[in-house]
Image 1 (cartoon, rainbow, N blue to C red):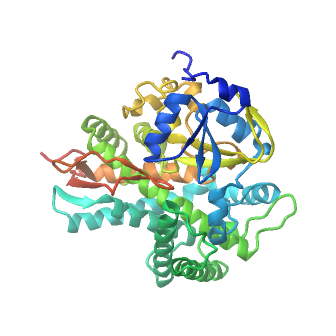
Image 2 (tube, rainbow, N blue to C red):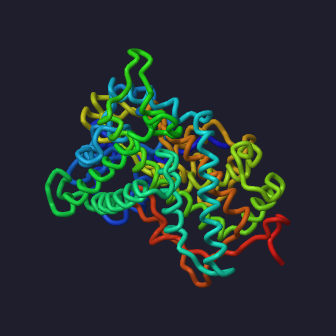
Image 3 (cartoon, rainbow, N blue to C red):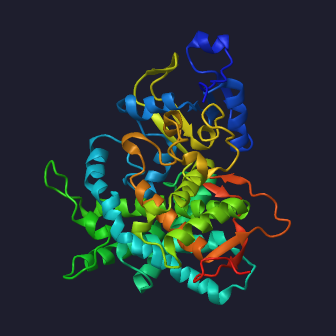
Length: 463
């Protein structure tokens, strides 16, 4: 691959001030606005959001400087996280950084390593099989189904089972109902973040009541986890985690904060990733057929297991390519704690830094034919070091998503389990789904596809 183009247009006034080019105000569709600004100004530019200056980075070297090389000069004390912190409290997502964040991260990291996640993968597959068994009795061949809703329920079942060893009990149902209400309110707030969550509007009060109900459920799960013979789940692992530097763990209040952040971070991103994956496959019959061939060879008609993950590399590449084109966690921000210099431009102290993986993952300087869905680009022999650095669906550096291995295993197992038993087509006349840029990248108004059963025993589609 040739050296990536920067697409920079030299602007004397920007160089004179030492600041990145731009100064436009955000307007219109967020994705189109960012694409136009990047085409005009290059890989570093600035705009104004609600009156505040924001500097956009779209070069992996510049991003690496902020997230890794000069990470101590930046934190998450930015507007978005300040707005939601009164509700989401001080978990890993909303924690601004520093020694307290690093301590929490050290304690929690072992629970999210691949070897630890392995014990939860059977539950991921079992929950998916339950959904598929229900489809067998409720869906006619070729019937259209709202997969966004189906995957929303599946993701919530997986996270509550993994966190709490909870499936269909009353406490799990109360937790799911409270979370659904809280998530809906937070989604509306992210679309229009006003007034602040600290203002006691009727909707904000409902949000706080929903989170209190979630806390009550977590308390019940914690009590059960401490009983003799309690099950092993993420909650019990975190409850007994200690910081090796002082041998102390986290108190119950902090545990509640972390559980809330885990659920919020895992639920909607996974739901959207599942929906995007099957939407893309429904329009790519050759890729879907290649996946079916791999699953027939690897699984032979049985449900997938943890041991099958490395034996199904094409399924993994489909997940990775989906996360390249449609990363649900598609944007994140940092604040400059002190002045810095990036690519010769001055980054003032207190400046807001904005990183958007939708732009980066479609940058023609780093990706060949970036608008084409091509799982083969993630084959080891094709993936360049430059592309590895330009690929960050889970962020990068010390604040890379702690659940990235969990998410990748879950998405691959769900893909394998569903594609083994079903194939999908788009309803006739369905318009292409346009990404809806909210806090996470939603597939328009949802994904509705026609669902067709496959012959499980023979491992082939029915004639």
